[in-house]
Length: 199
Image 1 (cartoon, one colour):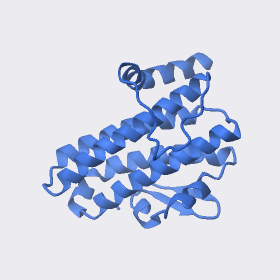
Image 2: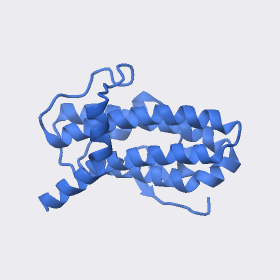
Image 3: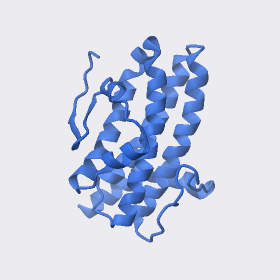
Image 4: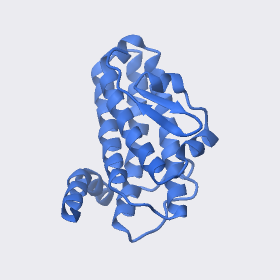
């Protein structure tokens, strides 16, 4: 089982690990004021790198999407969202097979995840205002939403109120998230997840 887990992480990490080696990155000091917690733990290092990659890809993709919305260039938007989905899938996989970390690490990851959540929510709101574009990309958006669901579920299972952390950082647009299948119960985190293909 351990070998299977290591193989999964290795296969899904290759792109991001090589990128980190050839082009070192640091956490955005504004988005991540405390910095990544130092550790020799392999899974923590992988998660730290995956957060870095995800923040960078969201920033790059957001710029491409916003500039393409006015021209209606669906191909560029789809590619940008696919890049985001790939990055988030990798991050979600790491959390899916993780054990419980100590409180300091969990708090850092919860804050980083909340910031990533709101960065994507802003992008989702922009796309949702363009019905035609939304129609073409809603399947990819739903796939991205699944990655968020996996990470939310991790925090819920270990009893860490990541939704509370998110609420301290901004307002969750539950209506827009419902469009991609996530519904919130603000007393207990995510209670349901449903991909409504007719939406």
